[in-house]
Length: 327
Length: 297
Image: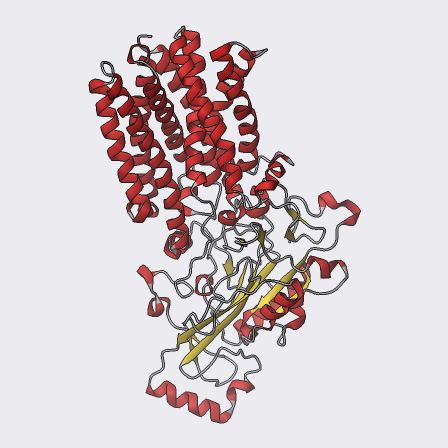
């Protein structure tokens, strides 16, 4: 590492070896400063992850329950879908730095921006869901069946595109989980829709919603576990700080809600309502956990620099620096 | 060298100008912060006082909405034994340091200073621009990346998308701000304020292919003079952002200056990101069908 001028007898000026000034776990950084910026998104965004999933999966549940001839369940599911569908755009607009410019979201359609694609999905799903719900309850909407089909179809991407949105960033804990995160969100959406509908529907008509809520809870636990396992050291933020707290709340509420639903959900309306609320809290809390983990991953330079430096050391990546002159 | 981006020069046709950029040669940066001041004055950027940071001479700490040029200060102990000390004194007495022909401001007796003026990289593959849902971020005729302040609605998506942490929201204003590579000055055939103010030509402005050529010469000269740690950063088309409009000559690993060693544009994985989201949507549909039809009504 000693740099000596070969042409003269100039004093050798040694460059300190990396290990000599290594700080946090062998990672070199600039005074421990973060490399990435944390997002500026506030509480509205994780809540929207929940309401978007709720709307999307509830529309599908309602549409399919109609097909099966369970109109009582279908109407309650449409009501759940409508609640989420009305809340979602309000949450998103409220989070903008310039809310009065929310229509600029529709200036273009860009596949490279999941937020752009998602805005259009939300326009279609958020526009058709209230129409579908009102039609299901009153039959007043002309062409209501088209609104129902549209809401059900666009509800599916509405429930998972938000995972693509956060994955399509430089934040390691989100980006490196891009294959699993949509399944975590999709499972959460199923649990949210099932839970809300279980809470709103008399137990006798709610069997499909119970199955959906339980399947979503199980799938959510499995996919979250798989995601964290695949992240390895990069998944550490899920075990620290606010992300860990929300993760724990999500698991405890999810397990309690699922147990209550299985044991008493068929016989007791009160138990059904309680389990629906517990599972809803679990779904919301899980989204918060993912949200907070991203902030923690961005703010610690070791999660950003460490894996990049390791990939260069292993020869998998060339990195962005080069010492050999090309001249 | 290709230098082409997705939208430059093709979408500009006859109006395309040569791609402009910065070559920041940190080996001759003296840490005067003239670039920060000139940038602030020209672009009328609000103050960004963070108080005394205790981190060398750096009290702005990072690029952000109100810091479009940021001078990093790194103090490194050079391991020096008794013999080294003696030879340093001897060398200084002989003034051999100057006789070497090529020298940097970072060589000292037992302490090495690294100073570097950081800036938006104006990436060839610019994640901020690609994720911007409003089109507020765009590629100019000079191949640079600029935020249109009359369009940005403060959605904040570009902020975590940038692998360098350049973009930031101005709290009182709600919009995102960053270096424009002095787009207004470029239109008048003027160089950016920081480059004009730099007293040592550590910040060099010009046509990107010319700058790259010049940088290779400087790298070779430093290497030949024994600066084995000298390296070019973001000067190649085969890195994770396919090269930058603003690239650097560094005297240590990038992370020492707060720069990521292997920045990657997230769009390079957009295909698998969308595939996974699509597959999950289909799985959700299948789950819904199974839940509704897979048991009693």
